[in-house]
Image (cartoon, rainbow, N blue to C red; front, side):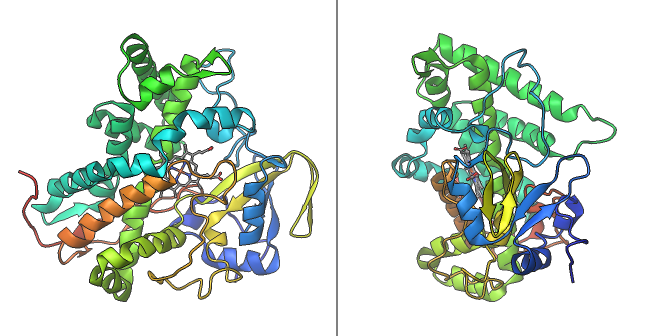
Length: 407
Ligand code: HEM
């Protein structure tokens, strides 16, 4: 039984095996806006109830993103010189809106619908890569490839480069390796160097891709700088990568662990896949939290928040809040409505890639559930040890070897 003193939401080990739902349940019931100490920082408010999470997410004026979206306060990025690097996810209105607007047309439902057949082809190609072997790591060899390929196509770079860039984002996210503490920064530099080359190419020779649109964009008549381009590029590669990957892989694991639910989905894929995906988003909640900073004093859940306090929304907790979801701890692939907050609470930063992410997940799960016959765990999965992104890191599976679909 957790107590206020035993709670440590910073310890990556607390997320090994899934999110700490017993701790979240205790917090929601006993201390829903909980002051959490931070060994090398100021401390923060941990917000765990659904309604409070939505309130914070919606109010971009009272709760700013500009001082960072992760709990530790970070200093400037390398390669930026005196310029302050700007990234949409950690900006406030009105600049945030101007930045976001540049990519919105490529992420609206109509644009996603237009590429949906291509997503189906890519998913089939990914399964072709493993189906003859009868076994694979579902994370690295299947789920991780989809978002890397898709963002690569949108940015107009080779698919293999999409995979290499995605590996860099993994290094950026990894807990600093004591033997190579500089690895994360080096990965950021490498990513920005790659983006620099794309920027130069598209400035010289425009093409029909998102990179070209961004390289030639202007904001209030001012050209989008090379650094702005690099940071935008980094965010697009990063934001859709391990989130979508973790949903596909950890969602598949959840279905393997709940064979009755697997049967319901497989029994009527066309009728059930959409509700199943929403339930898996609720169940897995790949993004553990987003941080905001109070711009003025506020009262939340009866607690007094001071200006400058860090306020952290725990999405995985909100998604299991029994005040909103009946039988919240039960996986029910037919659950509807399902107003989960896996893509955020609905404010200005609501996930730009939500439609795209859903379409990628739908294409990939359809292939996994129809083509990998007799799918089962080959070994115990290995979980990510991260307090920010939740899911399995390795998911060794076996299935009946089959034949490739494409020639
Ligand atoms: C299962 C898949 C995904 C999940 C769970 C997810 C989750 C999230 C969450 C929680 C946020 C923050 C919302 C907030 O602060 O209110 C976010 C923001 C964002 N996501 Fe996603 N995401 C997913 C897929 C994608 C994809 C495929 C892309 C496309 C590249 C993407 C691009 C972004 C961007 C650019 C932002 C920042 C938006 C802004 O600041 O205005 N995401 N996502």
